[in-house]
Each structure stands twice: as structure tokens, then as C-alpha cells.
Image 1 (cartoon, rainbow, N blue to C red):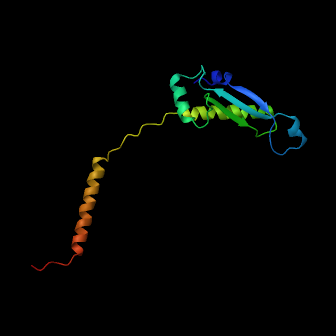
Image 2: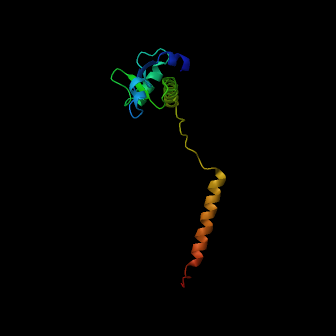
Length: 134
């Protein structure tokens, strides 16, 4: 995945932000809507697209488009930067392959120590019993 190529495929739309802010909110479009068309992306391989489709299935539209919003600051430019940063982090984290778990074996010395310890405790407990008078 090449980040600069992916950023070129992003589409932005400025919307009026909701919430408090008085007259400023009513006249300035500072909220950013970032859209990314996963299906028609040229910067991602087919394998990467399939991985993202499965992992982002709940966040994608029917047309396989990812939509992110950002309205944290009053600046449209800063919101755009935050949205891009979030998008790239999301994609990078989802494309990381988890390492396969290899089951470990106990070392020979640890097995030996364990059996010796078991023998010692069994002898200790055997000595606690009442002697048999046969």
C-alpha cells in the first residue's frame, strides 16, 4: 500500500458542522466527509481489498465505499488533516497480519525439575501418614 497514491484517491466534502457554536456554525462548513471507494481503488492489491472488505464490512456502504467524518476543530483544513490521519491509521492497522502462534515445548531441564519436585513432595506427604503395623 502506497500512502500517497491512496490519498490521491480520497474524496472530500465540506458540510456544516452540528452542535453549539452560534452564528459561526450556521455560516461555515467546517465538518469534513472523507469517502474512499474501496472497490475501484488502484493503489491497493486485490488481496488487500479483500482483507479490508471483510474487516470493514460493517463500515462500508453497499457500493463498498468507506465514509469517515471529522468535525473536531473549527478549521476545515485541520479537520481534513485529522480525517486523512485517521483513515491511514485505520487502513494500516487492518492490513497488519497477526503472527501465527507456534506452540512451545517445555525444556528438558524444566521437565526434569518438575519430576524431581513431584517426587520430593510425594515423599514428604508419604512421611506424614501414620505407619502401618503389619
